[in-house]
Amino acid sequence: MVIASEPCSEAAVKEFYVWMVKTYLSRRYPSLYRSEDGMLVGPASTQLPLDPPNDVEKILRLLAENVDAELFFLKRQGDTYVAKALILCYAFSFNPSLKLNKTLAEIHGPVPGYKEKLERPMNRYFTSLPRGKVVKRHNWNISIGRELFVPRENPLTVLPLWLMGWIKTVLDWLGIEALKMKSADLNPEEMNVRCERQTLHRLMENDDTLVFAFKTYQYPLRQIRDEGGGPALAEAIRGIDRGSVPQIAWYKASVYWGQAVVEYLLGASSE
Image (cartoon, rainbow, N blue to C red; front, side):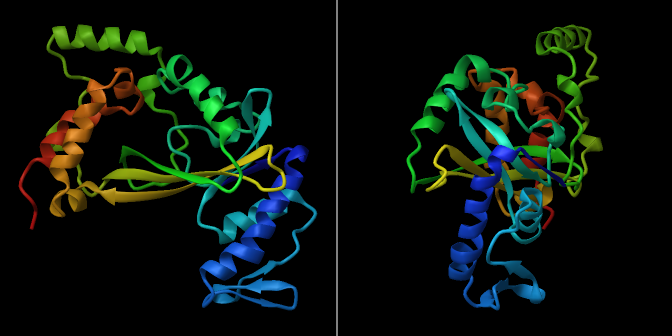
């Protein structure tokens, strides 16, 4: 788990904490939380002070230990937003300790096509988001292994994508499938659909700050196939290559696992 903050985030973090302990948790889960002697008492006798501590990182740790979500506090800076406080527990293919004080463009730096296609629209969207509105989206990928915390970078993006593409072209021409997972090597219990439920909202008082929250879920490939979701997921994987930014296939590493996973998903159920 990585917790980090800048002094300028104090007011925003405290506002979010007060809303969480005095409004959200007690109203959303009235059978689990109650106020008692200046504390919010929750499951297993956990206690959260109703008034936030003075230390911002202590507040962030309390949130991390009691709220099942990872958080970015994004403060407006010019025409973009910058991460000024964060809680990251389950990083996937990035080093979470490097995200503090990064702009949206820098946070999304490794994403192919972000600067050309998404940087300006994202900045405009974040800037125009009104108070009182919460937006939600989902993100997904395929992960190898059951670990939730995977801070190591995708090895397929260590080299420039144009160079990796050239290498793959040469290997394909030579008939060498060094960059493709073999179907026999696929373990459906160790490979998962990794999903994030992401929300974004603007704080009411410190309205120069947006809170980006996300929760990670993992579903084994065998479960997806056995529940009948194989064809839909296989089509989504094939669609990665058909998008407007082909390099996404390298970013998601589907150039490696894509064919093997599709073949597995379209196979017979294990039931």
